Image: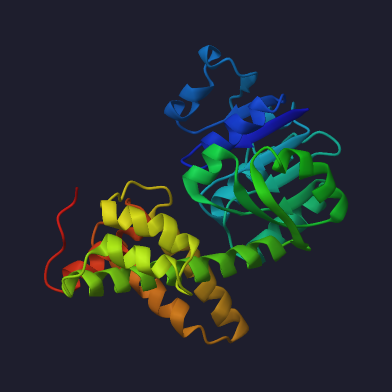
Length: 298
């Protein structure tokens, strides 16, 4: 199958590589030439590089987008020289970015006017999950489109769930970002408390892993906090953006989300402090600074 991929960043690059390794012909386009380096002829992958999203669309049966936010999705799918301008009959567009549910519904409706099927299928698992093809994929859209995409999803992830109609995948991702954002914030608070109290963080983590506080966040992010490894697997500014989506949706629905609101403010402070390019666990540094001095990085 001929599969197009647009959005070759921290997450998209390994996802696209895994699709190509699955035996498909991969068609790619990127704004920056540097993003295309892993797809050179020397890579051994069956990859075709195109000059625009429209040119890519002339060759692809399925097109995956993995970009920053809704305006970027709309630009590559519906803008000038976008996918919709030259889509083949029966094209399936699959957006794996994290955008607002309302934006996903709007994009899906506009693509339907041009007889293009659409799935919103955001992911969770960070760069490690993208590299190892262990992402959690939450899809919204028609059942037939989901079934068509299922073998391709299986090249990128393990936990693959059809949540509901278009936009439902983004609702699930918003829930994921509430839970993970508050989880990272809670862990950062706990570790800052332990450090200021003079306790050994490694021993504290070991103790917590044996009780009800155990979680993937404690297991993975906890170890990285102890190692002072703030290299981004998921950048803090991206979590800020995702929680902005959550709060905008909450405002639209008239919902009170006090924990998510407080966490969103913490990520605002992280980005405002110049730490936004670090992993989201850099919340720990923010709390340390607010508590009278941060620990030394490894």
